[in-house]
Length: 116
Image: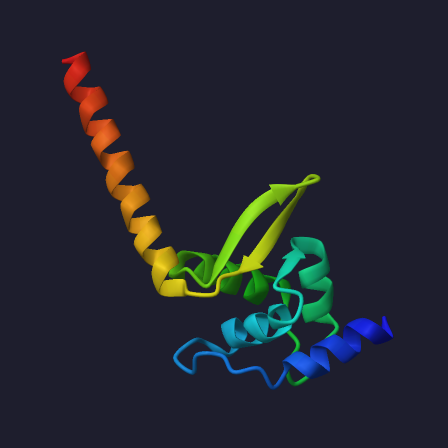
């Protein structure tokens, strides 16, 4: 546990975008050092923060959702748990998500036109 506390202390000075919410900034600081963390371990680390920085479960879940949507994090399943991965360049991730969205819309449109 001491090593995870040290990791949190080291990452608390990592630069994070100031336009993000306090909760989002906290999550990015915690993830800055390992860059990748399973959901359960991330929640435990965020709940174990000093009281002034500590997040409750609903704040964690909302901030994780927002960070994935904004492209700061990517999530994937591994060994039955969701793993969050810090993105180097959120702008590229957002562009990728837009392309995926356009591709899906086109496939849906093509699929609908074939059935009519």
